[in-house]
Length: 253
Image (tube, rainbow, N blue to C red; front, side, top):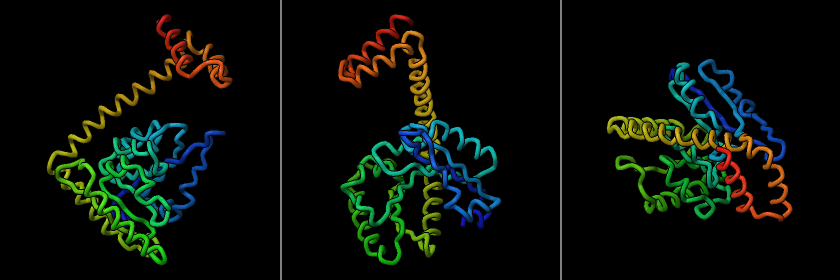
């Protein structure tokens, strides 16, 4: 719909990496058959490679590259819903939470934190036999969101229904996204948000680089396998092992 309107759309899809093999399926293009043939669309699947937050270490840079390449809309699809899968909220202008109508999650299963971060909640697959459950869950979330802390003074998150099967709700959601962008931009709240995101991004990079430096330090690198083995065998507690590694690092720096 967006490319037909003349937009250039980039889709950054993040796939979970296997904890066992480290590999990812990266099969997003196979389920986006029409979009993958669209000359005004770019699809980039990436593995998480163990990064928490539902995104990859380079998602932020990828967004900037797509914008520099002339894509005026960048859609970031994260791994999924969970306790830590909303790091993307610190990378994008608008955070949209997609929920199935019959996933068994309901309000009890979804973490409160991710709902509070959402600028828009969308109930998907609202058609056929799932239309009634979708309406019910929509009503539940509308009631629940009245009790949550507001992230913005100007924007009130809403709960909408869509059906990709018959196309219902798609134009309305895009209209709501544009409304959000206009409200946030006119109030300078979007500019402030992007500045805060730059600060978060800086500290995330520092944490990653410090951890990498620690693991590769000459006083630590050789002791890691032995201490990990002792922790696995119950000889050392995790806290004691961590203290030994930190002490070795401090004494050699």
